[in-house]
Length: 396
Image 1: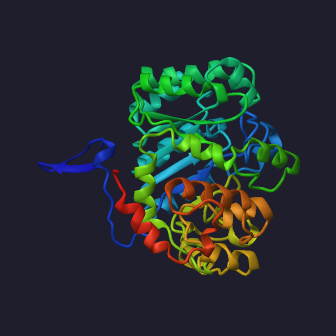
Image 2 (image 1 turned 90 degrees about the vertical axis):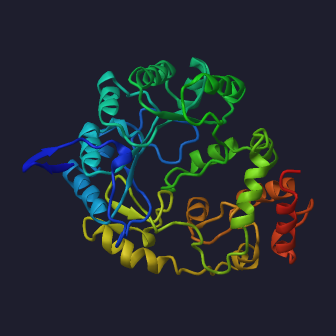
Image 3 (image 1 turned 90 degrees about the horizontal axis):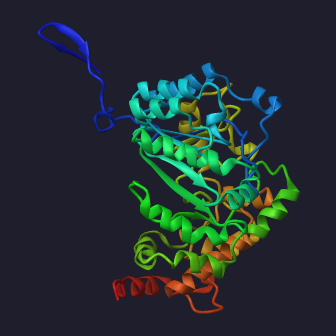
């Protein structure tokens, strides 16, 4: 930050809480997600996006100059936070350059990583120029064997733990999250105990368990494997209900957000922020890669995507008969994760209902007392009264 005192111009390095931006005329209201690469040094059995560490994939990715231009456009649109994800973003040789460039524009940075490629130099960089947001690290097991089986890489566990220790040594803020998979299912207790020992801001266990299919729709065989890894709706509820806060948090959430969405497909935040894939295409959200919904930033700008393309897409209405008969009338929308991106990954359309998500939502709703066993939420007419009753029992 440049300041003038007694006629002398000098600079002062701002700490993240001191960053400020004009709030008027902000077009990029949400964060900017940038998928730096689809390549990954893991080959996780459940991953919806990863590609091998090979030259063909690398050669198709955005170069440094193009990425800098996108980040600059985001800053000009009022963006406050950039999330670097992948694949494994630390595989990029220019990661440190892009990170510093983004921080110097005044934006906070979220880094999604498996932690294996964190080096002393990178940990020191995060310590000297803090991201402003905790580094988010995925955990695939608490032992060498379980981690290797889930991640598809022998020796990966030791590298992940080394990365964690480097962040701790340098005082870099981070959070951890895990995935419930057959190889690491027995590690849940160890993961939760480890969380209590870490110096992190959020010690609540966070798990992925209702896995997305391949978002490029590029691997039917892997999709079959991913489907088999998903927890059943009943198992999902049992895991969620292990948290003593689950019921109260969900009552508050449902009190605000459930209700029939009608025919409009986009009732979420997709398109208010922006996502950019590894090849320079802007998306309304990262999983939504349907060709008719993306904007090639080699030919257009983030501003045009946010001002013109995305608002028009947000007006899209469903045409699928099952969606209109069920999803459009279902008051569990909000609790259910049915959305155009999920439909795209499962079916290659924007509005075909995803049965698995429907079943998970109904299992949660039954547990929370919103529906009775065997009841279909789209047939419930007195949903407002049920929601009110749920809120009245809060704390009981």
